[in-house]
Amino acid sequence: MLYTLKRGMRLAHITWTFRRIKKSKQATTQQAAQHALSEILAGSRGLPMKFGQIMAGMGEDSSYSKLTQSIEPWPLIDMCPILEAAWQAPIHYKLKSIDESQAAASLGQVHHAYLNAHEEVAIKIQYPDIANAIDAEMKLAGLLPSAGPIKRWQFNLDSYKQTLKDTLHDELDYLHEMKQQLMFYSTMNIEGLHVPRVFPVLCRSNVLVQEWVDGVRLSEVATWSKQARLYVARTLMQTMFQSTFEAGLVHGDPHPGNVLFQYHPNKPTTTLLDFGCMISLPESRRLALLKLILASRGACQVSALDAFVELGFDADKLTYIQSYLPQLMHLLFEPFKQDVAFDTQNWQLSDDVAELLGDERWWFRSACPSDLFLIIRVFQGLIAQLDSINIQLPWWEVLTSAIKQKTLDTCLQWEPGTAPPKHDIQYFGSAEKLYIHIERQSKKPLHIVLPANQALELYGIVPEHARHHIEGSGIDLLAMREHLLKEGLNPQTLIDIQADTHHYHVWLE
Image (cartoon, rainbow, N blue to C red):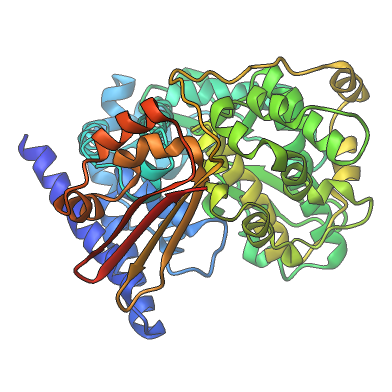
């Protein structure tokens, strides 16, 4: 309990600093707060630092770059007992030499060493008690309430927490990581890609030993010749596509610390590190994703709803925006529609989706399966990598060079299974939309448009403070629900009250 409280106090400090960043209106104050948060997250390790590395993204010039490049590692003297306990032998029985760590991360740190057989190796050692720290933080995360869009648009927050928990559990098991690295090594065939060789006999659940690789960061690649940068970019993109559509095993942690580059005039080498966070995609989901890409190019016909559902999206929620899904498909897969190099810097996807769906874009986001955000993050990482080395590539041409023709042929013949929506609540009426309009003093009005049947869920949709004002005016939201079920969802005003500094207006049309 004391351990959990201690981690809880640190999380509370992180939350306070994050809010300070969000509220700051001055760039210098915001940047200072970001650097302060980076320091706090770096000192926390575990779950907070993992979140910080996600915030750092693929960029090496952000305020959080410390989290991917220069975390202060533990002294070697504190890590040696962990190695000896894992190997059940003194260190000199296995190692000729071992250096102080220069690379620390959220769950462990890496040491350069030489085996007695003279192989140069990298030894990743897990921090003691880090599993308990993660467990304590996940318990605290389980206490976090649902609020804002998470509640209003029925996000399955428990599913996201479980995905995070499962992912971190896998990352804490270095033997599992070793198996994934061996599998990735054996299935991938990309020119210019290097996956380090592991030494299974020395690996344990908290120790991973692999060949040592020297290299530079992506920021230095940006200074190379265009020919070299093009080669690196193709290697990165082909790796992404082949692992997604052929292997079904995708490297899911694309921050700068997990990739190194070795310069050769004609064929630079790209080395992937850290296979703890890997994403498994069953064949049906891979085919659904590829089918959407092919359909966006006009190569085949597909029900966008069925394909998204096969990917894992919630069918019931997608039916609210079903008519928009074909257009949304074209927006999401725009880079694959062109046969020429695609400039990602001019791709305004968020703006285009907002223009198409308005507030209803939250239905799409909340319908998204919790594990798919990991794949989205990988695609975002790839885009950031291309931008950072100033290279544009023809996505479709690179995709077809990375996967087999047999995979494309199979996809063209494959049809996603249908999953008709289920509606447990029976309702009727002529209204099509529910409008929620809230005027707030000194703030922009809040205007939300939902399907009419969401009037039955007003109690959960309306923010708690607003519910307090509404029910304080004598309106019983639960009784209103029963009335609408009985009388039908017909055009009418449901709420129109002035409370303190807010005006609440809710109606059906």
